[in-house]
Length: 100
Image (tube, rainbow, N blue to C red):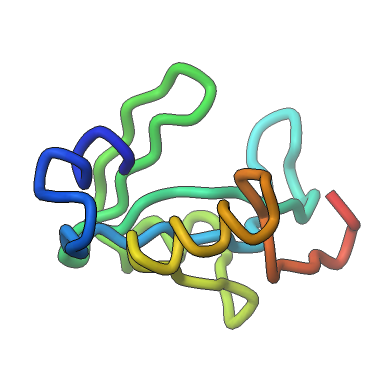
């Protein structure tokens, strides 16, 4: 998000949305609920966590991760404000069932 949005100008939103959400794990984390961050770009989720490069529809991603209402979205402007206020990358407003 940083590199993409900064190329569009520091004072403008670039259209990308940062999401902090409670997801339900798969594989070794099957059934474990935890906090996760990803980017929304016009209905497509971009997830580059843990060396992956996932791009899929928001509908499909939310279904796979069992993402419900416990999700917080931040425009680039909101993201910059939260980082400056808190001096960390987040999550800022997310509270998960498991505390993870």
